[in-house]
Amino acid sequence: MYKIYSRPRICIPKTIINEGKKFRNPKFKKTIKIILVLLIAMSVVVISLDAVYPIFDTICEEKAKSIATIISNEEATNVMKEHSYDEMFTIEKDSNNNITMIKSNIIAINEIISDIAIKIQEEIDKRGREDIEIAIRKFYRY
Image (cartoon, rainbow, N blue to C red; front, side):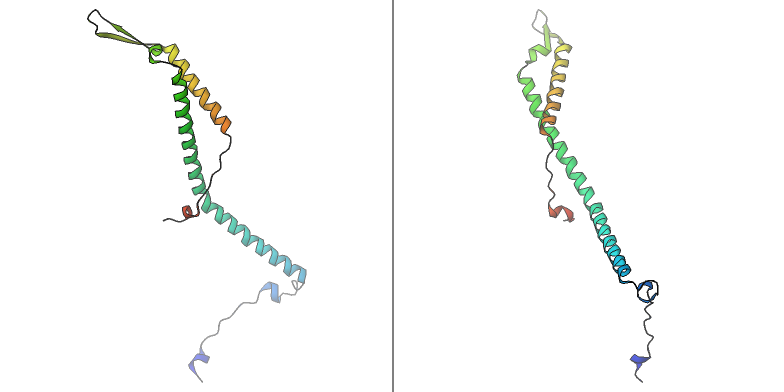
């Protein structure tokens, strides 16, 4: 006898679904198969979402920072066009024309600051939702 035939055989255990007397009903077998397919599908979805979520979260944060920076710069520029620096500061000089004191007009500065904040918030509210796109190359480490 050849050596190949004397090796130990692989024992495959008998499954409950195939050999059990209780489970010979074809409807039950189909139900088990459907449940298994659904479990595998749900597992794939959960694993995929767990892999995508950190990338999506990072991209959303960067997009929000970008939008906020653009809006704040635009609105600050628009508000400052309406005001001059002479409104905010008063320069006092002595008889030799040397600057002795610079006084700030706190009321005017606070009005400008509040105008900028209000305009920024209004512009953000107007924008609403922004679309975020994820390039497929972001999923790879390269």
